[in-house]
Image (spheres, rainbow, N blue to C red):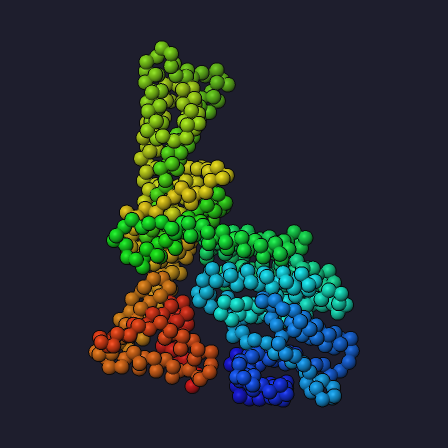
Length: 606
């Protein structure tokens, strides 16, 4: 957090920061956060190791409410100092200040320094892969479940109370938790952040009835926000699959977690197992789907990796679109989504899909004729005994079915329906079959994934319960269309988002164009998330280094913005011989946030 020197001095005085740290031989670095009752400070111990120290001011007056506050603080310290779990914050040192026999004014607790909390993970949306987010959530589920195993209801699970360092995550701040056997919780308790409260927590006078299910509800909200960037509100909230289509199973889990009825929510242990199974299942399926040979030498290796990643996710999503997606949502999808990559069905699916359409056509005619039987308007079925013309019609159908070579049971049903129809209608059916075959080839070979699935659904295609659609769809390497790669047409999952992606691209080009006017460079789009900036130091002496110095000159030493600007230069490739420096940066944060601040907003901390 950014504070003025005056604010820092005020907090130091209010919480006796220097005095408390001096009593344990720690030195002050900066203030990390503050609240009504305390402050968290970044420090160094006597060995120079960075630690975070939480200093909490004790109430000076008596009374039941203040005594309860003190007991809550002590419960937090006792639990986090005695319980050792990899996903719960551990206090390594704690005590009171002063500790010389006078009445204590402050409690303090020393812990490992975690530079981020889960709010940073949510806000820095593109900096964390879906797989990394899922791993964090599994760790969080372990922490919540560990607390529940000890009979503790956290009651204040929110992103700010979840700490992150590299690949590790811990649940912190048990200051308002309900501990088993404690009588501190009273009926009117409402101490947590309302954005993450369960419905039962929002009821006045119901605090004594809060159960573990309230923590599960808060966890469900965080899972959704982690992938959508929005806190769910009401029933029409943004779904995870809108942003990450292949993670549709997470939406089903969130629905269970945020059920209005506490009794219908799963336990934290069940959520932990569900998340682990979901991740392992996703990893296994994606590995299987990516483990294919790309049979097209014209595709660059970098594109091959991209194609395999996208196609594996597309194929996982396809099952959901075929079987579960509501018609309204299906009609809102952009059928050209990921249109640079085309697909085809397997020969088996193609054969059985044709048979299913032919079956539907024959059954429809059979039903039409059957209705007329009620009014004695009889249609004479094929005479396969002594009518040569009817026999020829039947033989043509047999030949068609043999050439399709699909499911024998379906083929037998087709022949039964077909032979039960009149010769006139059988001729119509045979003419329509030619159209069906031609149309089907055009619609399910060499087309984008959503175009293919919508066509299957429109024609009422069904799989057996044990069958998976992704086992019956293949990449069509001969129809890779690189000209559509990372275009707005390809990136937008919904038709309504096409303008958004186009405007986003235009804004990025505007920012980079503004920079190029001041610091000449060439830039091009590597993919939808990254750009390459190339500086020619021979043609424009030291142009890259002047650009870097200029960016850093807009920051204040030790600030968060300085860290963001320094992070711009994390991926550099230098060719000393040619004097060329290539800088690879991300579009979502590096360009749209950091560089936009400097070159569009003229932002400066100095």
